[in-house]
Length: 197
Image 1 (cartoon, one colour):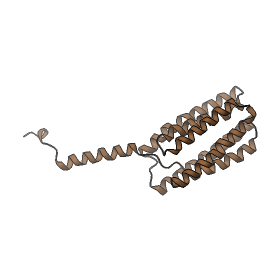
Image 2 (cartoon, one colour):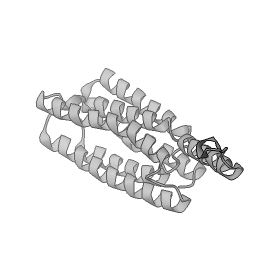
Image 3 (tube, one colour):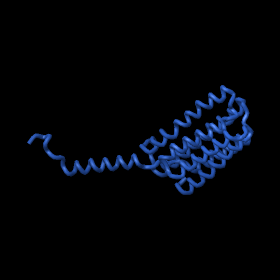
Image 4 (cartoon, rainbow, N blue to C red):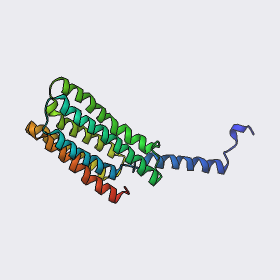
């Protein structure tokens, strides 16, 4: 009997099925390392920044203060995510983390490009709506691969962004404080309590 016609052993067949099941479960898993406490700290820095920056102005200083806070927020968020992932034994290079990142990062990149356009065209006072809307889109998209509460948070950010665009320019700092401050803190506390940090 030729080798090609020999049926696979029961062991090989079972191993193939187990490999398929393991791969399917890994692809279907939620990304659970979204940092609650990191969100709280990000929110606190945003409240301080909103107070320091004041109402939106078409000046490099106003934009610079918020971009500096964005850098601090990224560092806090990534640090808290690594800490939470290590505590929970969650991989930051596995399929769930990659899917989360692939959904989360593009709206942020769009926000970075639009920030440059808004600044160049002297529309910096409209950045609060842009930032809230696109951060909300990032959280909603990434949240599709995370716990159910995360996309809800993203939708709340998007609603604030739309409201900021529909409101007088001078209210932009209030929307920034409400979104990147209070909303981030509130959802961060719930995530920390319900999903382990």
